Image (cartoon, rainbow, N blue to C red):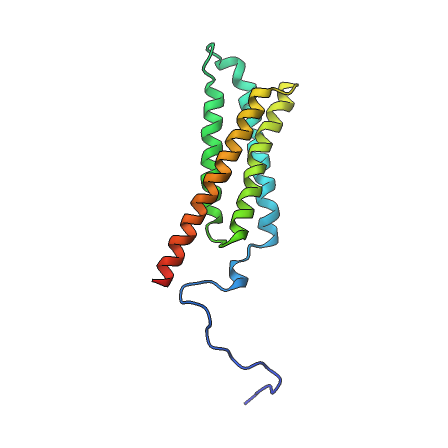
Length: 154
């Protein structure tokens, strides 16, 4: 029998049943770097398409391209909340906020580049939507975490 006298003794499970260890909960470095970059690229594509098709679908007041873009970006924010629901505590909120800034910043930046100048209404709308999705996303993450902890604890 090979017994290593220098090996640490086996420790009984110290976490609650159904919870992940700290190593399992931490996101990989690759996902922390690649996800925001892909979010920026995706939101930039949405911004470019929105700016390019605006002259063709303008009906004198209602901007369907802007409405579609906002729906797409809000759906992406919900997807980010779902993605970050596994990261409990401050880490999940920080990752969500970083990805939220990447989303709205990529959209507004690409729209501005294609348009050729800074359009105040776009930036005000993106900053406002970004702040609202930041607050609502963090509240939703907190609720999800609270429900998950109460389900495991109770």
